[in-house]
Length: 259
Image 1 (cartoon, one colour):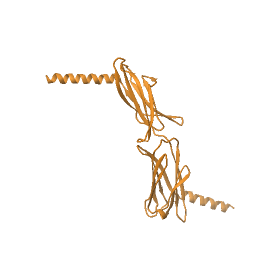
Image 2 (cartoon, one colour):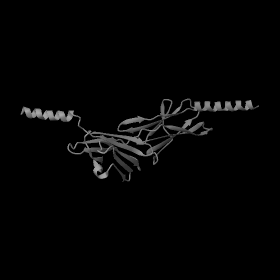
Image 3 (cartoon, one colour):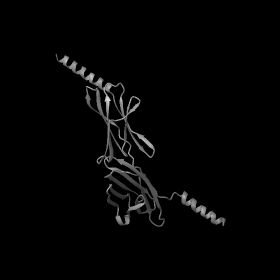
Image 4 (cartoon, one colour):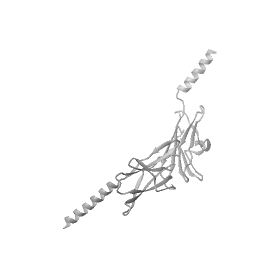
C-alpha cells in the first residue's frame, strides 16, 4: 500500500514539477474608434504539435481553429446586431508550437454589460495536453479629459456660457465646481457617438465673468460602486481678462511703433 501511495506522489510531482504545461495568455486593449482588441497567445511544449484552438463567448463556443483542416491561418467574420467581430488565428511554425488568435470587435451599439471570452488550446498525441484561459472584459472605458469651451459673453448680465464635454463608458457625469463649492449645471446632454464608440456628454454652465474663483469641470464615471475621476478642465475669467489686456497692450504698442 505504501508503495502505491509513493508511486502516486512521485507521478504527481513529476507531472506538476516537470513544467510540461501549455502556456496560454489572454489580454485586451481598447482601441479608439473601433472597440476591443482581444488576443490569445499560446506556447506548447517544444516536442508538441497544435491540435486545435477553441474560442468561447460567455462559455458558448463560436469558433474552432484546426491547423490540420484550416492550414497556417484561419480568418472569419461574425456579425451581430450589437457588433462585428473579425477573428484571425495564425500558428507561428509548422507544428504550431507558438501562435495567436486576434479578435477585433467593432461596436455598433453601446456595451451594457461585462462579458467573458475564453481560449482553449489543445496539443496532439501522445500527451493531448490542454489548457483554457478566461478573460473578463469590463464594459468600462475611463472618461476622456474634460474640455471647456467659452460661449458668448452677456455684457448686461456679466455672465458667460461655458460648455464642458467628455466621453466614456458608461456615460460620464460632469461635475461643476466654483471655488470649493459644487454648483448645478444649467443644461446637460448625452448621446452615443458611433465614431468613438463611447457615450459623449456635455454640460452647460452660466458663469459670472467677474468671479474671482475659477470654474472647474470634473468628469466622473461610477461603476460597480467605484468612482473613476478623469482629468478636469478649468476656466478662469481672471486669466482670460489678463490675456485680453495683454493683447490690447500689444496692439497699442504696435500702433505706436508704426508712427
